Length: 391
Image 1 (cartoon, rainbow, N blue to C red):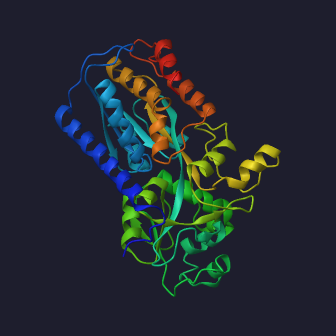
Image 2 (tube, rainbow, N blue to C red):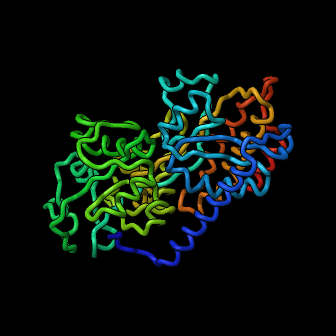
């Protein structure tokens, strides 16, 4: 049984075709030129370069679309393995891939394992996590609070007609149907953001489970990647799970309206997650959480707080500061500068939030730290200016 559709079906069919088209082209490109490395300088686009990367499934829709369009402009192919933030970090730490991607930055203990030298972490996109459910005949926008969601994931609320859910949704006839909790089976930055939110809203969750890329789930069924969680939710009547917003849209899911700190019911959209981002303009790899429980006390903050969606996260690209190959290093720097500026329009097309100006500045300052074999920065002023104009 599929979940109830809540928006015009043609939009999702078009979106799905677009993603399939981009994926097919990306795979074909990798098959044709995998392993072919051209000659490049830091100032000119290489004739043919293949980069390898692995990590976040949260990023995969944006990366697929962006990498496809970037290849059309530069002939640079990115072979990206969407294996989850944990797996991506491990491959990056072992220097197996040119860069990794994670929805939570590497911590000091992780960085200490990195075999390729000093690590820099670049903010690459931002989006909301939808709390999706599969209930026949129930429209989207079911009301949910953080404490009640925590009780569901703790196994304390097990049925959809539980009094706590009925109280939140007095106008909805909830079925007498068991709740199937769905979570990630792999190490995941998406899980970190989700469990970090539950830790903030529920003292019981904080004491018993806590936050992390992997946790000891009290109940539930695991899915590999955002794709796996989406698949289980779609195929399981009564299921509830957390997925990056685009996965919910592509799969026609219904999803919850969450009660935010300002006491407003909000759905994950570009507007509501952008409001959450605006409330936290000074993010960095050391101060990255945008989860909070306090309504802002300034006039502007209060206005943003009314529409801010509380389960949102930035994602990060993990790169070694010192690149041993000038060709590979230049290709990485060119790609990241494009993705954090001109390429952000493709993030917006897939319901991610394009990086705010302040965070784009953080990204560029980080990219400027990457140097080549000669110790000189690979991001030239000309390249920085070129993409800044199209940001």
